[in-house]
Image 1 (tube, helix red, strand yellow):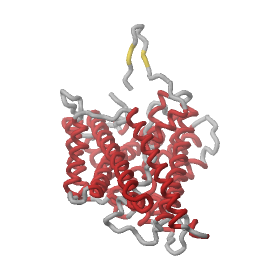
Image 2 (tube, rainbow, N blue to C red; image 1 turned 180 degrees about the horizontal axis):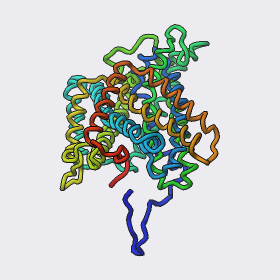
Image 3 (tube, rainbow, N blue to C red; image 1 turned 135 degrees about the vertical axis):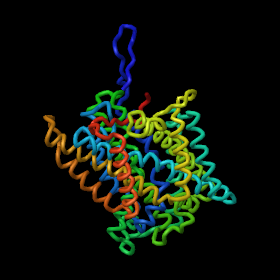
Image 4 (tube, one colour; image 1 turned 90 degrees about the horizontal axis):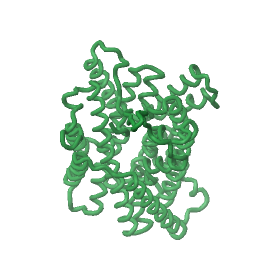
Length: 454
């Protein structure tokens, strides 16, 4: 971390001004109150309904993992990244694999955002083809990142507030529709949790492997460790509370959607990516359809722009430390101070991905990398607190072991194609690592956190 020196010659650090409530708000802003809506149709088709159950299964996995993230933030309060925890506690090469897998997440995120935005834009102007929308959104993502335009934390907070209001409006319309039109009776109230006509354990856990995308981003709380009051306590609490709050809110959102639109008949391919806004059309008419469609469109645009910036920043950090060819990846534009080569490369990759991948395949590939990080962090917490640390914590072995087992089980239920492509990505990363580093020691590899500035 760079430091600044005051007039007396003393090094200045970040001020510890953030309280627990600030961290929770920050976590909710990162994940977004509308998190399950974009993946609703994909999860519903994958799990034959049962979206509520997949959300809750994913929440259990994330709560155990959140505890491990919070505990490791105590040990490395200035790092806040899975690759650091794994590299320090297990092995530098294992840390590299986690970091390389995280890079796949950063690359895929703008792709699935562009896919979703293009499908949502067609809901508004169906006469414009998908290909035109895809090119337009990728150009917007890339153009704004070339100019260095980033959304401020205040704008993000306002967007999160706006999304929360839209969620409340949807819930009100859905409750009205369910009470006056759908009118479920008896066991129909429980079908979103368990429908004996469509239930299959393998499909349920396959759906859960996608539903985890709802929670992606909660680990960003750990990057605030240097600005938090009592980080040893508050990072852990904020991470767990954020996961729980998002899980409960998400379960409510998808439960109402399933009651309003029972999922025994799968969503057709033409509407699976934007299935939730189709539910909004049913419960609230054109007004709610357009409101929710626009809200999710803005949310996914923001996520896509931020994800592309993060990926460019991570590639720059890797290039700067010779983990990737420095002449291309480690260069900043002289005027804008932006890693222009990386932004342009990612723009091309994003554009290609919008035509080569579906939203579902992209989401599963993204979760391949995310679960490798989650498994690694749980393993690191288990090793540290069970075998190395003198600090006594509750359930030092049981909590990370449960997280490790649940995350591994869900990871195994990812689509086979996603696992094969993900394994190929890791293989390329390992090959590149040994080519770049030659005979240098593994510990020489350093990773730069894209959430931190130079």
